[in-house]
Image (cartoon, rainbow, N blue to C red; front, top):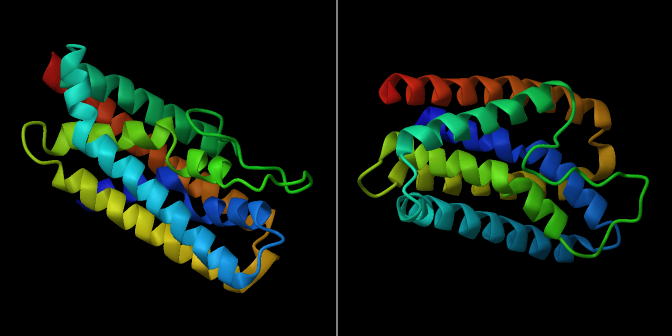
Length: 196
């Protein structure tokens, strides 16, 4: 369970989400930012819980084995981790909005960053690894905790404001990258072991 939560948190990366949130909402009052944070957290939660619930069913429709999905999903997650270690996040997620550009009024880039294909892959892989036949409780709990901590982080950055610098983001992103890469490789090894 702890591994699942850490994996989802590492891929969502709430600290970077907080920075993107500030970039996307520069002209909103604190009350409007809190409402926007609720919308973002709920969107993340709905996307990830739906992925946990129907992801394995979609695999069965296309006759994709759980072992093959574990291997490919693990490779994607590990590749995301390696990207994060290099200070980039280009695989399966939208890039953070540059602070020097004018931020769009939509929160879609943040939602795509937090609950993009990489995060969805992580949740479906967790569902496949932990509960391949039953209710994906582990993946759902990880999604709920991930969305909850992201919401708490967004509320925190509303109070802290723009004092969260790029250096802090960079350190956290690289550390989380190491965790994401390790989790991805663990999924690959588990899939290979059961496949062969």
